[in-house]
Image 1 (tube, rainbow, N blue to C red):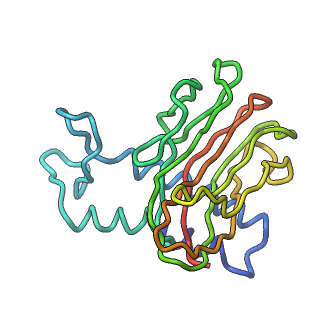
Image 2: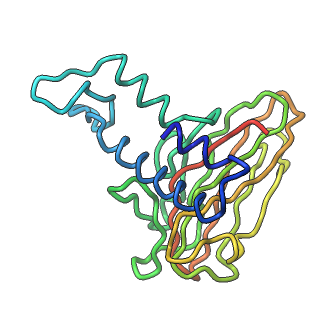
Length: 210
């Protein structure tokens, strides 16, 4: 994951190779997240064992390695559908077992936010906000992504989800928004709004220094 996260942004990587790297990166993240132990009391992930043999225990070395991989080449990495990110519960989105949040027309999903929050404070400066999305039949009117400072109400950047943002064959794509933050008391949220014109998945949102 660490190598993939860094290669995605290498200037000499072709668009085709970048697509393959992103696909591998999303898959590796999903597997890593799924390997966590689950607390029986709270039904929440609590970390990783050192290996899969019986009697193996969670240890700081394994947890550190996994966290470094999940957060590679980013200041923050947020999983869609999981705390601290929110989504419109009334929209009937589906949190899949492979750790993506899905909007499915045939499944009864309704328009709404597939991601909002987490209202974090970023140091004034310039950033890339990256949304990892896929859509089997991209079309106009699919929705939008934006970055908003909830403290001031200012939208730092936004874009409609045009069909050309999405790669064919339902491959994972990355939509980047460049932002500049001046308000030191900001509470930033990263939003993805979906309209029911085609199915769509969202995996994660990354924050990177620009």
